[in-house]
Image (cartoon, rainbow, N blue to C red; front, side, top):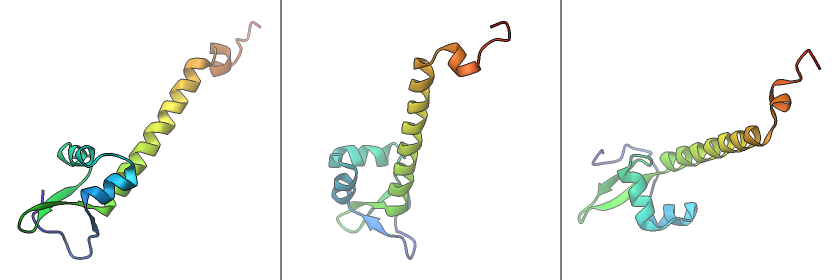
Length: 90
């Protein structure tokens, strides 16, 4: 993780991200440690800051995952003829 942010990078505190995502601060830090959000410790004493772009990317990933899960649930509920069409013998 970089020690200092690049110029023009907007940073959020873990509490701000937690409020946006409706998570706990500990869950936000866990997302940073799992590299699902980009964050860094800056200042003295060092405090976590999370890049705004990574929050947007995380939300995009969550939307895509939800879309795929909805398609999967739809396909599991559908019958074979609904998915693949009727056979020519019908």
